[in-house]
Image 1 (cartoon, one colour):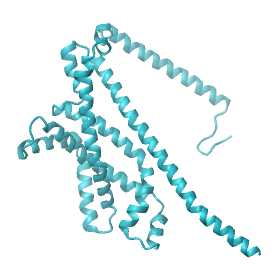
Image 2 (cartoon, rainbow, N blue to C red; image 1 turned 120 degrees about the vertical axis):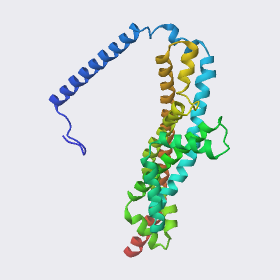
Image 3 (cartoon, rainbow, N blue to C red; image 1 turned 180 degrees about the vertical axis):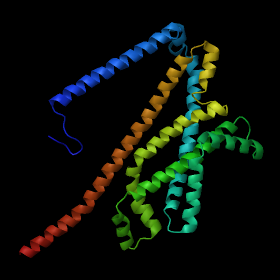
Image 4 (tube, rainbow, N blue to C red; image 1 turned 45 degrees about the vertical axis):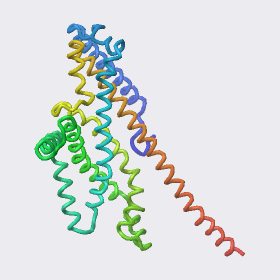
Amino acid sequence: MSSVLYDVPGPKAKRRNVLYTIAFLAVLGLVAYWVLSAMAEKNQLAAEKWSPFVTDSQVWTTYLLPGLVETLKAAALSILIALPLGAALGVGRLSDHRWVRIPVGAVVEFFRAIPVLLLMMFASAVYAAYTPVSSDFRPLYAVVTGLVLYNSSVIAEVVRAGVLSLPRGQGDAAVALGMRKGQTMLYVLLPQAVTVMLPALVSQLVVIVKDTALGGAMLGFGELLSQNRQITANYGANTIAAFTFIALIYIVVNALLTYLAARLEKRLRQGSKAAAVKDVAPITNLEAGAAGSASV
């Protein structure tokens, strides 16, 4: 038997797959045992290194939660600015006018080629030299600026690829109805391309959340990951425990973001299917009426 994507494995292949799975799990268990044994030898599994995260609420209220708030603040500001800016740049790259398409393409390729950390450091230097932004807010401004410049360029490419992936007949039909290029893009192409672009956009939003940690490493931004240094300084050498809990927080935040995006994608697909059914129903009734008149 075969499916569309691959040949269904037979009895021998199924037995091999089971053996491979067992062998992989055994190797994974051995690696986990070796890691835990090494940590135990270094006294990294001692209760006093992990208990503050459970018994002392100040670890959360003083360090982890404020750091999470700063991370979410920088990520939210970056997302709110980068999404519309990236969409505008993506539409600009699809323009029929060379005087729009070429400069926009140069801007996108320029900022997409520079590492986001370098953009943050340049932004911090510019804010320090040429603006009255105080040193208290400068790290946040620099982090948001770097994230916006880089991720809006990436989002522009996502938008461009999403629009170009649509069947050409969609745009041709809109032009045949007398719609201008801007109307075609706004009312026909972009709404359909959103569902195509959504998985890539969600991946980029997750990257934005994680890249806020670069500001904490180089610019002194008080985001979540940078709180590890404060926790270690105040509660002893429990670096691994701090990194573990910080990683779990990142996993939860990004999982929630992915879940919300999946719900949004599902609703968009259901809405588009319902709209298609409503559009087809009058045509079907009209055809049925015409067939009945012809039979009479």
